[in-house]
Figure (cartoon, rainbow, N blue to C red):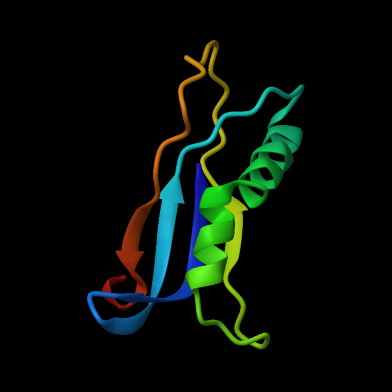
Length: 92
């Protein structure tokens, strides 16, 4: 699971800080490598690039992404990755 946060986005006409979760899959020998592969694949995705382009963060207050809840699975369907499940950081 990838967790992103501190994204300053304009949704519903108002600038606020948002976070998101999105599941990602990676083939790797261990959890550490799987996390790095999944994060790098996500950073290169159009979805992430569009998110960065629409965010209004200063260099001193950048957004972040990190891996969380890394779990080994025996198989993955190979379907297109899931979308982003956003949450308002003010609600947390």
